[in-house]
Structure formats: C-alpha cells, structure tokens
Length: 227
Ligand code: HEM
Image (cartoon, rainbow, N blue to C red; front, side, top):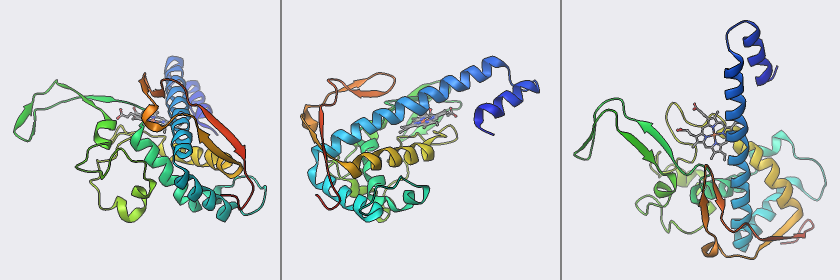
C-alpha cells in the first residue's frame, strides 16, 4: 500500500477529510520535486566547474558499476560514498530551501539577548553553511568535508539543509537516494562542462533557489576508464 492509498483508506474511515489529502499531495509535490530537481541542477554545475571532483566521481562510477550497462540497484547506494559527499556539499553551498521560520513559544536567552515569546525567527541555512567559524574556505566546493571523519569534528547544527528538530524534512533520506540514482546514471555516461564559472552564477531565491541565468552545460559521452 502506498502513501496515497493509506490516506484514501483513512478518508474512507472518516479519519482524514479530502482537503487534508489535497494539502498532503500539494506538500509532497512541491517539497518532493522542486527541492531535489534544483539541487541536482546545482550539482551538475558544480561538478562541471570542478574537473578534479568530476574525475574522482568518474573513478567511483567505474569502480561501482564496472564496464557494464546494468541498471542502478538499491545495493549501489551504500557504495556511492563520494557521490553522496558531492550531493551534500552542493546542498551546503546551495541549500534548496533558502529559509525557514519558527515562532518562539517561550522567552529564550541567546548570548545575553532575550527573544520574547511570540517572536518570529527566520533561519537562513546558506549563512550558517558559509560561516567561517564552522567551515574552512567556505566558498570552496570541497566534497571531502563530508567524509565521516570530517563530519564528526563539526557542530551538529553547522549543516542544516533539511532543517533540524521535530519538524525537519521527512523526505531527506529519500531525497539523497533519489539524487544518487539520477546523478550516478548521468555521471556514468557523461563528462560535463559548464559555460559559466561558479562566481558568474547568480542565485534567484524564490520558494526554492534557482540559477538566475540558467545553467549552461554541455554533455559529452564518456566510456569506462575515460577520465
Ligand atoms: C534536496 C531535497 C530536499 C531539501 C533540501 C528539503 C528541505 C526541507 C526543509 C528545509 C524543510 C522545512 C523544515 C522546517 O520548516 O524546519 C522541509 C520540509 C518537508 N519536506 Fe523536504 N526537502 C527535500 C526533499 C524532500 C522530499 C524528496 C520530500 C518527500 C518525498 C520532502 C518532504 C518534506 C515534507 C513533507 C516537509 C514538511 C515536514 C513538516 O512540516 O513536518 N522533502 N524540507
């Protein structure tokens, strides 16, 4: 039974009105689609603009998939560690959701400043993700930051593309799986070049962030062993 069937079942039992189903479908369509598509778009730019990273990715693709045309399988997920680092580093520099907000329920003291209950707080992940207090050379695309030995050295809230706390993103594991599946399929087959350098890219912050002037890429077929 899938998620929609579950909700229809609840509706039939009088536990969830149709408007409730509609809201969930809206949420999942937006949260589940635009977020991942824009982050894959930024990934392709960053990988194209960083040839050494691209070479390492191609090496990993060849190690995992070999010289063979087989489809992506669930077991591959665990082996695509460098790809996962690249996906996470992309979300550090370009977190798909540019801000999220909370209303404070009780007075809270932060470094001697009291935020009274009722205050709305806006959290901007890209500011946290580029804070030199937590990130060395924050502007540099360096996927190795997400190797497990590096992650354990960092503050747990220094990286929050999926927000944090009880209302964080429920789709985060699915998002990483989906991106690994789509992006490995592309990276296995293609070398990518970008017309624009990263410093020429501008961010358009809508509900999610997009490249303001588009993402100008060229794709060239590659074979096993070509780096
Ligand atoms: C790269 C991909 C994604 C990013 C960066 C992302 C990020 C976020 C963020 C920042 C929030 C806000 C949480 C808050 O207000 O604190 C959120 C909420 C949510 N996301 Fe994602 N998301 C992604 C993919 C997905 C996918 C694939 C799904 C579903 C399949 C999904 C479903 C949801 C839902 C249902 C919520 C609302 C959770 C709640 O209010 O309790 N997201 N996401």
